Image 1 (tube, rainbow, N blue to C red):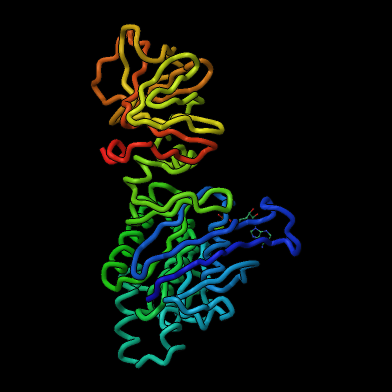
Image 2: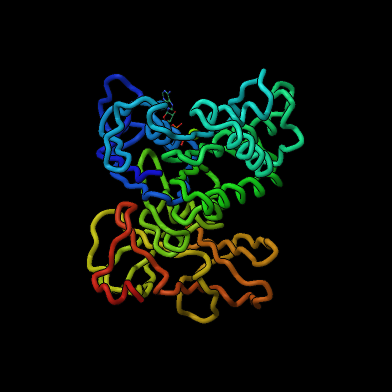
Length: 364
Ligand code: ADP
Ligand code: MG
């Protein structure tokens, strides 16, 4: 197992990158702690696979270094890095049995036959393929082949890290949950450094203790699910995570007050006078409906009943503001005002979160 350090890393697929826009991975400094399980979350095309393939050595970065436990492995080939990687689509040996496919990484490393037999049996149980161990991989469904790929990825206990690149894409929904649970169990048992790539926030938030969010070739935040929810460091994290995501409104901010299209909104802390394009962000969970004449005057666009709660979509001067209202909460036609919980408001300048001036307020 290893701590993995990315030092000044960047990658462009072009031979002569001109500007930042030519980089699939923009300059990145990041440490993956030894033995932690991470989810790497971001929309399609943001650079997740590029980053994973650089860590495993399938791709050589155009700039920077990769260190395993402070040892520079940038020039090392994939095999030398001692890593297990599972891809989106199955990679199996068709002419081998399921058993031999699973045993392959262990045989390769010269493990004893007894150990191989026991370990293959344990992995087959984890992926639910004990009954098929003697079948050839050829002729199995894509789903079954992907389970073999996952099993092969998990079979070795002595790897530096386990990398999963959207491994459950071709797996049916019920089995997805089951396999994710198995991966978590594996992590508890062996404590590997794990990086699990996904574009699905639910998968990311349920799999990992730490979620690394990527956007447009950049890591924009690493945090616990709670941190990503309460204090998104970038507007992308705000609206990508949550359902619906954070409301973002253009504003002028001065001290403890924001002005949004002429209406004053109280903030939970003193933000000074931030420069750039200023927005305030508040999650739909922290907006309440009110009658009377304080708050933002809105008109309702749509009400969606999603079972446990309602999503109310409002129009405020052409901008949409979403509100989550608990099931059974009385909503009357005279409630045409929205009030934001000041402590739940974040302020953004050019998409990045502004730290408030008084640290005491921030901790509250
Ligand atoms: P993700 O895995 O998050 O979907 P990728 O890392 O695959 O994203 O891709 C990041 C960017 O790099 C995308 O714009 C993609 O089109 C580009 N890209 C990926 N692989 C290659 C390649 N082999 N050659 C050129 N461009 C690539
Ligand atoms: Mg990818």
